[in-house]
Image 1 (tube, helix red, strand yellow):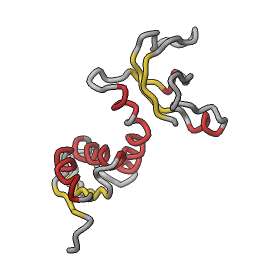
Image 2 (tube, one colour; image 1 turned 45 degrees about the horizontal axis):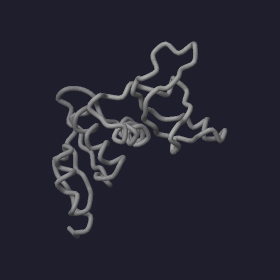
Image 3 (cartoon, one colour; image 1 turned 180 degrees about the vertical axis):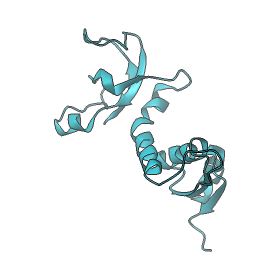
Image 4 (cartoon, one colour; image 1 turned 180 degrees about the horizontal axis):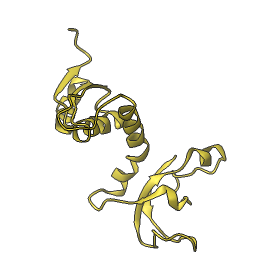
Length: 145
C-alpha cells in the first residue's frame, strides 16, 4: 500500500515539522514502490517526513488513510479539465463513478473549490450519497434515456 495514517513514534534529527505523538497521514512516493520499499499495509511503517501532513482532528485514521491517492487523482483530473477558478465562472462537470473513492472526492472538489455544476453518475442505491456530497443532479447508469 501507499496511503497511510498513524502516530509518529520517532523522527530523524533533521525533521522539524513532526514530533513523536503527532497524528499524521500521507502517501508514499512512487519511487519507494519502484525500490520495493512500500509497506503501508503493515502495523508500523517508515515514511519520508516530506510525505506526511498533520491529520485533521475531525478525521479518524481510517478516514484520513483513504484520502491521499484518491484525493490526488481527483484533484489532478479536475485540474487538467480546464475548470476555471474564478467567481462567476460557469463550470460544468460530469463525474462517472461519483460514489467511488475518487469520484466522491471529485464531486466535493468540483463543487466546493471550482464552484462547478456537478452531474454525478452512479447506481440507484448511491443517489442520496452523491447528492449529499454536493452533486446538483444524479444520473442513474442503470437506466436508459
